[in-house]
Length: 198
Ligand SMILES: CC(C)(COP(=O)(O)OP(=O)(O)OC[C@H]1O[C@@H](n2cnc3c(N)ncnc32)[C@H](O)[C@@H]1O)[C@@H](O)C(=O)NCCC(=O)NCCS
Ligand SMILES: Nc1ncnc2c1ncn2[C@@H]1O[C@H](COP(=O)(O)OP(=O)(O)OP(=O)(O)O)[C@@H](O)[C@H]1O
Image (cartoon, rainbow, N blue to C red; front, side):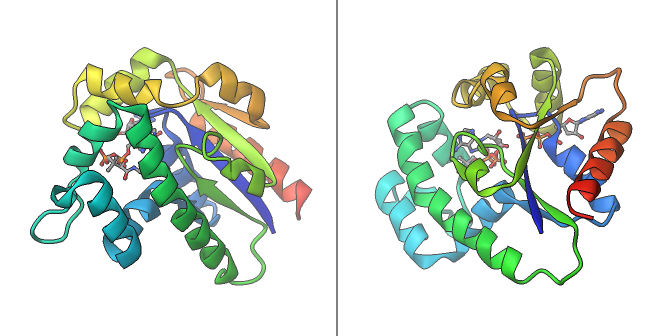
């Protein structure tokens, strides 16, 4: 079964693209969502996060204090590297388990990850897709979706590879601007992947 990694900078629309693939029956592993799940379920990881970023990394209800962690890691490259080193290996393991449990007869699956190239997880995929959008549009979309400032979004953008670097690493490109149809681009790739592994 073909494994396709799909990525894109913050607000590029990778989750939106994955939802379209899902309507075609393609299973999607959402690495960012799974990361957050593991961060509240895996006792060893929880201890690692608390000892690295303080007990206030979790609320009294044992929920992840996203704002606290984000304020530390997106303002300090070393702290971000520590968080990634704690979380990413656990996400890799969760992906392997998810793949093992899939039913037979699936032509291909998608692994959606914000840091597909940065984390090296693209090496474990057969092909990769990059979703791109103009910076202004990405900023506007994230600010409409989340209660964040331009500076907060830019701080995350700065921690990710640029689209220029990622374009050179990706096998396929989806352009999520306001002129090209996302659905048609997804259908075209879907047909291409079915031919690779019918
Ligand atoms: C720091 C955390 C708590 C902030 O939570 P928050 O709800 O504000 O953001 P969320 O997780 O929804 O991420 C939104 C976007 O931020 C960017 N982002 C998230 N983590 C990272 C990271 N480690 N490096 C760079 N950008 C990141 C991505 O574009 C992502 O899509 C959270 O992002 C986190 O736990 N990150 C570590 C896990 C991780 O690396 N995830 C990404 C790949 S698995
Ligand atoms: N083509 C589009 N037209 C209108 N709105 C869009 C389009 N693509 C994405 N959006 C909206 O922009 C926001 C960001 O999209 P999405 O969540 O898919 O991006 P993402 O790359 O997964 O972001 P993040 O890295 O922050 O998780 C969402 O609110 C989504 O509904």
